[in-house]
Picture 1 (cartoon, rainbow, N blue to C red):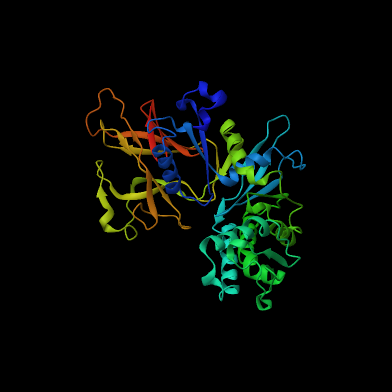
Picture 2 (cartoon, rainbow, N blue to C red):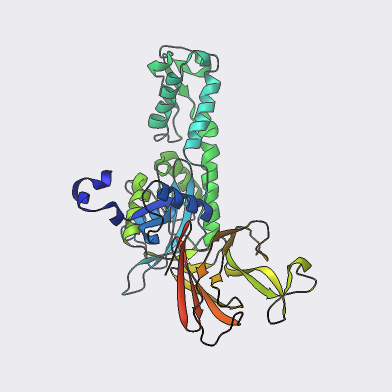
Length: 431
């Protein structure tokens, strides 16, 4: 409804384009759920063009925001930088490389597989609540729920953002707890002010979470192989003074610049707007999983199970349900890069059905029935009329796959005719 106010009231809802951000750790199935939720919420309709809703990972959106600061931080062509998007629930990271040949516009090239984990700032809250529960266990029954919530709000709003790891933490006990005048030297409470020693705050609250973030950064630096020129800390948790200091302590000898850009809490949402305006700034991505289609391949005696042996229409012995790989995890893919393979079908005049499968296993799947293999999309491509062809005629076709932003475009070239199906994870349109 807010979009319909002011200057936007001259436009209909069908003219709006949406860009939603998702954690880097999300699977295609999770993105599919997000798209379905957007349809259910009425943002877009089932039959809308896929580009009405763009899904972008949160660290990619943050990279779009930080890309505008490349000049400010003196990053040049070939330099690599890491986005550490530390939010409330998750911390997501990706390493990008600046691609700016002389005389050409700047692009960003993803060089590591985006990764993340559930180690955001809400886990600091959980650790702090356990610490307070232990300190106030003898008074806990007398503290009403609203008083306890007020005490936790004091930590979230006043303590967590300002903690620097150098000084003891003083927490003013809210009146709502009924303990505002209490003295209990055993737990460090004096006249309603709780003193938490800095070492206790670090070991009990911050370090268990910070260590997970540092581990994620270390893994991304290792995956990058080449030196990173910068680490940009963004997100609400990215503003934490203690997190920034710990990242500097651990990685300043490896990375020249560790910086928190202006308004880091808005980096993702602002970057999402930039992504909607220019979807080609990031022109290279790294595949996170295996992608492939169902194909009948030559049967390997002693290797393929007998249950998968079939006799094809031309009399050859084939193995059904083989996983024909299109993209491998870790493979760099240009935006709209075409991956092409040639197949044979005997289904004429019926159309082509080519499901797209995905697998998160580190090892290449051999069959679409292997554990971990999931079908994430269905492509149906109509069969053109071939003069003089009889039913069950052998037809050779080329299946091109274009792996772009949040959609995969399948293109079948049959007898000189090209048929395209665009599959957005969670919806399909054909032309």
